[in-house]
Amino acid sequence: MAGITAARPPHLYVLDDLTLQGSPEVWAQQVVAAFNKYHADVVVAEANQGGEMVTAVLQQVQRHLPVRLVRATRGKLVRAEPVSIVYEQGRGHHVGRFQELEDELCQYEPGDPSPNRLDALVWAGTQLLESRGGARSTG
Image 1 (tube, one colour):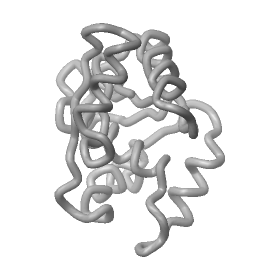
Image 2: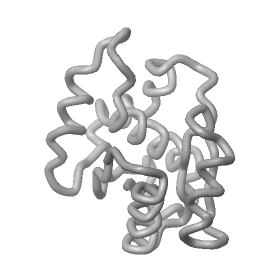
Image 3: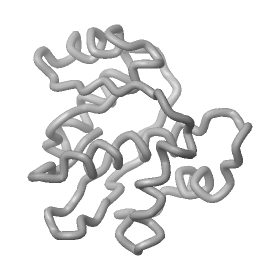
């Protein structure tokens, strides 16, 4: 779960790391609960990993849930660059301690298995940075 300020330049905030392994019903319930808890604007989901099925499962839990599907067309490191720059500039913040996320951010090397938490942060951060006009939070 992430949010962004309206300041120029914007600051990115990680509000929660809700990564879990579970059935579609379990993860959909968690996503919808977080969406409502944080009064999010949209859920960002990677289309490469289930596409429209992800939207359908989420909307079975909460009808009309706004879902933005994103598709990986560039390599992971290229996708991560804009978010990485925000952190390098001191504009990336964690509201709390997210040890597993922080470990992935520090330890990932190209060729390693895909890091779930890092991927989620990159997708959320990218969407927020691209749409920063008024975005509060995104899952």
